Amino acid sequence: MFKKIFGKNDEASKTIEIKAPISGNYVAIENIPDPVFAQKMMGEGFGIEPNEGIVVSPIDGEIVNVFPTKHAIGIKATNGLEILIHVGLETVAMNGEGFDTKISAGDKVKVGDELLTFDIDLIKEKASSVISPVIITNSDIIDNFDTVNSASLSRGESTVLSVNIK
Image (cartoon, rainbow, N blue to C red; front, side, top):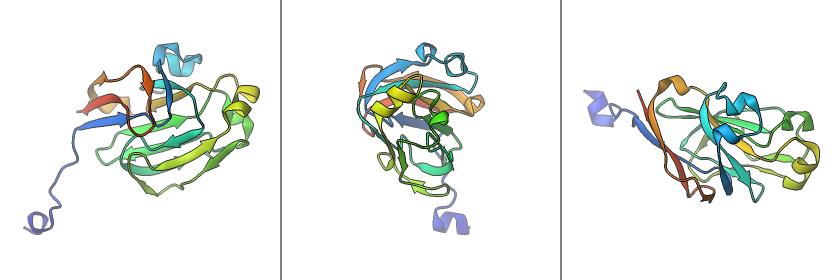
């Protein structure tokens, strides 16, 4: 009875739209120049070749992980979907240089909230690629998904994937 009164019986939606966390050009996951991502070893997703150094939340959810090297952030949606945003490739070796996080683990975020900034030129100089994978790390809970936008992407605005969970 209390659940009905206080609205706690609302289940999280089984469908979620994943927005672009970074402005730039869409890259199919198979075309990410790193076999771990391209062969979907970490899960389904896509890449973005950024044209600016700002990362925003692609979903409403909670920050579950901010890597100590600041190059990657994990977010969990209310429906359980987990997303990893990995800025550039081989950027872990930069040890946080050129990255500035704006959030911490446990923070609640909405689509478009700024998560981190990064120096594109420094990544181009020190890492293997600036292409940034966006991966659903618990892809086993996906029933199906559609790529909605595979062109030029605007952070926090362009829907890239529509995902249905089991």
